[in-house]
Amino acid sequence: MRILVAGGAGFIGSHFVKRLLEAGDEAVVLDKLTYSGNRANLPQDVEFVHGDIAVPDDVARAAHGCEAIVNFAAETHVDRSVLSAEEFGHTNFRGTQVLLEHVRQAEIRLVQVSTDEVYGDLEAGGSSRETDPLNPSSPYAAAKAAGELLVPAYVRTYGVHASITRGSNTYGPNQYPEKFIPLFVTNMLDGEPLPLYGDGRQVRDWLHADDHCAGIELILREGGPGEIYNVGGDNEQTNIDVAEKLFALTGADRSLLRRVDDRPGHDRRYSLDTSKLRALGWAPRVPFEEGLRATVDWYRDNRDWWEPIKSGEYRAYYEQQYGARLSTSSPA
Ligand code: NAD
Ligand code: TDX
Image (cartoon, rainbow, N blue to C red; front, side):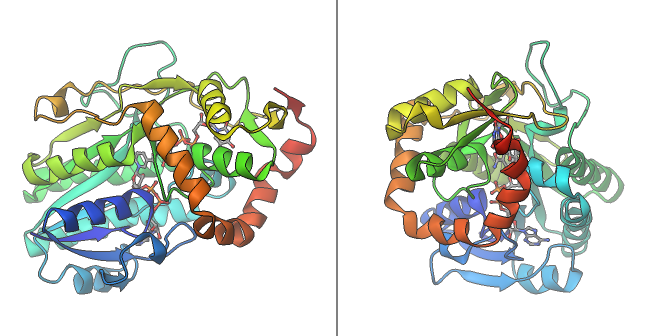
């Protein structure tokens, strides 16, 4: 198959492109190269179109000759959406609509990559099923929910062939260091303070990027039109427990840990029921301890990937996000 991977220069999208190429498929990448998009995540010779999923001509140009689009392109960081939500509406909602218009006219397939965050907080227990109502808490999650709600509408109204994946917190190599695990690992390697939000007891279900991509690939090949699939790691961990595992792996000094003001609207817990995707034959394969060890090794061995990021645009973002919080923080 020839497949357009939108957002393929980002973290999960680039793992997916490499997976498709290994399977013998053809991949074309459409990516706007925002702050989190990075050409260095991809093989040099991959077909690459620099463009915006919210611009119909860019999509038509990139999707020429493709049988399917898998959409990873998004503004993805909750904390940035709290600072400013402008771009989140543009890409996560408007961009998804432009892709749906394209697949409708070209009569090709779409897989919309969404997130467990659309379900909102599950503090009370239990796990989210695909039929549960959407209850997003952050501007990021609301924009993702708005984008994915267009999918069943286009399936029902125009008969397009489109499926939705709702993945849980993903980790692995090449993740932009604004997210929890790569932020903590790279700060540990540099001896920088580690900003733990609130009481650090929030729960996330961690999934390795390879397992997330295997789930999306299966849905691309076998998913039904209008169907939604949870992709979760069955691996719920508190943030403080993840931090402790990272201390053990990096050998960093525990005094770096700082308790800082919580994220506004912070969801306490996410949890996914993955029985629907498991019934298609998928299961997460990478044990957390092993995946985390390999991820820490990757960041230790690939400073040339993350040091330029941390000294660029990231510095100003980091100061805005953490400057005041860290100056009034307490040891955790
Ligand atoms: P990322 O921020 O690393 O990558 C996003 C990519 O999209 C970047 O390459 C960026 O340049 C590109 N992009 C942004 N706006 C664009 C636009 N308008 N047009 C074209 N390209 C654009 O994100 P990620 O963590 O790899 O997430 C990929 C997808 O998976 C997102 O849709 C996200 O919502 C979803 N997801 C992520 C996680 C996670 O834990 N990282 C979990 C579940 C779902
Ligand atoms: O500095 C930090 N300190 C901290 O305590 C950061 C960046 C995060 N945290 C906490 C907040 C969360 O409880 O760690 C947890 C994970 O935070 P993020 O890495 O920002 O992920 P999260 O907000 O859970 O969202 C992620 O998973 C779902 C991705 O960023 C989304 O793109 C995806 O949809």
